[in-house]
Image (cartoon, rainbow, N blue to C red; front, side, top):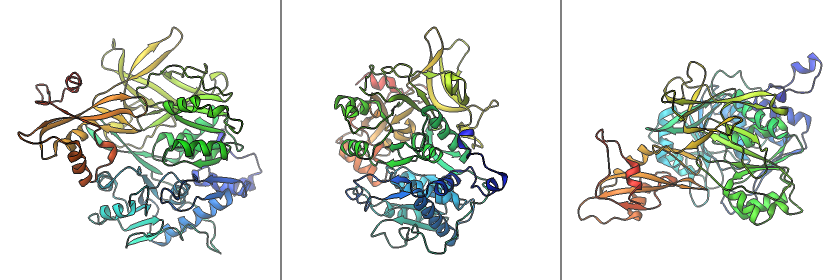
Length: 537
């Protein structure tokens, strides 16, 4: 992992260097370039009810991390304790993660779209000591939601928040993150527990914790830095929240390793993104393919003010698109987040055609002769099959599972939950991802179809219900509900959505439309036949 190493120095100097951890890298950058810009907010934070936009130099960021870590320690959080953090994609998000790590805590990161239903299940799964959020966001009151979740869970000792008008009982972090005179730099305790917990789903399993070490996070960042040749001159414009592989692999870890500027964007707003792209001098970004198509149509990347030198396409699970010419001299790359576990970063060989997903070791380096960060394998149902489940192993792949579907096999491979078929072009084998009706992928979230079935079936006006999906180039899967209403009951999508809102379910789990059927088709074992539902559409 030579990418993470500091320049050669004498042994005495090296003994006083901060460790090669995430928060240790921040401290190194703060000592090397304290005045250099490190972090910047989007310009629309006030419109989102998130207060003024902020920016931090590396020295200011390190001091803020020390101050917030000291606060965590002062209120009684101890090394190894878990906290759950639900913050928008602002500079406060990486600062809070780094402060928690400097205090020796494990952070469970929660998407902003999650509501009480999902957050409550997380609390039951990991029993966090504290919940961290914001007072207001885009018309919602997230801190109030955290208070409601905390009330029945006695293991939650603190609810903490940023922003004005926090609910009673929520401790403000706005003052806690401000450096205090006389505060000595903190040294993080040795870590014997995961740094980060994210969450995914598998068929039949709606919520699965994914435990990551700092080494795995930094390996993911090193893969990106090496693949794209990033350095301290770069400005990374990041539209992906730090709750999954895209945010870690494109933003958090590459920022710390390269010493670049990290500019956050939340939520995705095309006009604001273009404004940031041009005004902030962004040199690196990545977006879903359909958004890149819009940038190409609008000729944004041909603007004289556009400084991009690295442009990536982030591929959701089942996109099959026409070639795209972006009209820019920037290096193009493809980014594959796989099963919420890890990501693969590939430079394009042909500018208008995306790189195929490799089968086997993925090497990053000159002429393909470099470090292997990840290896793919297909677990086939039988030896003659051309399709199966995608498996991953390598330094970037989380190995923290003790049981369940994420437990590594005897060779260290972890199942992604994604299905693929083998493609051959005469030179090398690659993988083409294919649909699994029991595991949906919607807007970056993996959703077990069985979870949606249960939510829709609980509506009092239905005898039975089931979800099904249709492909969408931007969202991945568009969600629908097939319903069999009770006799005499009126069918209303609005009534179902109101029911789900009352249960405080995340809005991305709401169906777009209802399909009324006489009965939900099932096999002899009672399993839903989703293909039979699709035939009725």
